[in-house]
Amino acid sequence: MSSFREISDSLLMYFLCFNSVILFILTMKALVQCILDGRGVRWITVTSANMGAAFSVLVLLVFLSSFSGKQDVFNTYYLPFEKKLFDLPWITVAVAEVIILGLQIYGMRDGFAYRMTHVTPGAVQLAVDALPEGIAVTAADGTVPLSNLRMNDLSRKLLGSTMSDANRFFAYLAEHGEKQGDGTLVRTADGEVWYVSRRDIRADDTKYVQVTAADVTERYRIIDELRAENEHLLDIQRRMKAVTELSGDMFVAQEEATARAALHNELGQVLLMGRHCLDHPESTDASMVYMTTRQMNSFLLGEAKEPYPEQTDALAESLTMARSIGVSVDIPADLPKEGSLAELLALAIRECAANTVKHAEGNHLMIEYTRTETTSAVTITNDGKPPRTPIDESGGLLSLRRSTEAAGGTMIVESTPAFALTICLPENAEKPS
Image (cartoon, rainbow, N blue to C red; front, side, top):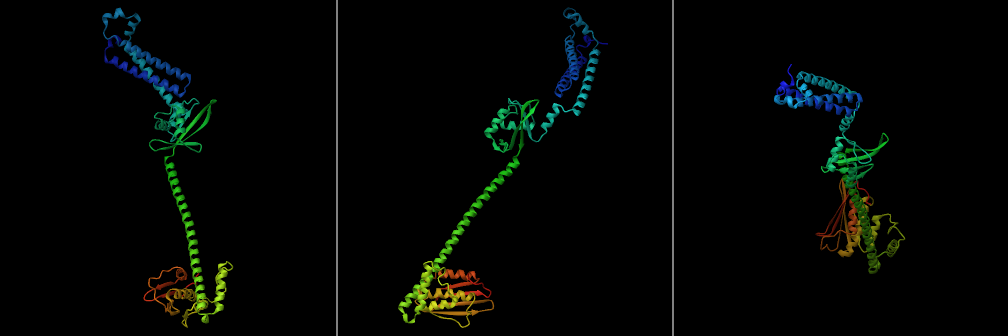
């Protein structure tokens, strides 16, 4: 059997050296894995012995490979026991390597079976790393004995380094985060939003802090959208409230303007009646003038809610009012004396009689009545001067138009070639309000 002195510079020697290096690396890794897995003293001792054997074989082969044909100095520089090593058959080291490899394979199989049936620190770390949320455990002095991949990734995005200093991490949250319930919302440079919370835990009578981080980017985006929509809805609500208040004010103002216009017309008619009574006492019913004037005064003084509360026949009263200011009215015999058309005609006669005296300098109203299967209409004209400009509907005319339209009818005012006012109502028209 060849000795190492004979194969010192051959491929076989290099092959044995390469195998010894690989065995030393494997046995050293196995020893580290045993320590990390928390194996018992027996397995750590056996693994250490196997690594020591692999290291010894490696050192021996390195020493033997240094001979390389130095026969001329062999007897001078090498000690007797070293000479015996060179004379060893190479098969002895090969057998030693096979034994070390066998022990290594057995140890690896046993270690794999152990990790399959026991919770090892490595298994815990793998499980923690697989969590979708970030988790870390920190000590009181800020050191981090446990941190998974997600937490390290968050720390790199915020601080530029892995989770190694908890105090620095907490200081960043306090400065740049937003307090939200029991945790803190923090935004990364790439737009992600994380919810970080922490709570105290105890293990082996030692106080630790458990830090968890959840990616809430999508939920935060939805919350932002809801917040923006709520702001928009609140703005719409404020605007609707303002519009409602303005509409109420406008309605009140419109009603006040209508009431003032009606009062102005009623008062104007009373004044016209008084003037006509002074100019033509012989053709005026003084008692009518007295009663009308007294009723208007009671209304102006607040003693009555309506100018003429005792009126029952609106059309008859309007005719009496027209005569009292010197205006005669021709009423068709077939004109209905009750209903919506009669009530609107009464309002129209009051307004047209006053305007005939004030603006047209006339004293006579003519009324035409037409009726079809679906509509009824009255047209009022006068014997006064025609209007010089288009008629501006305001005061009594505007109030008359609103009453007509409220009853479902239409009103037409013409100024050329002469004044004419037409009110048309459907047969089923409601009474004017």
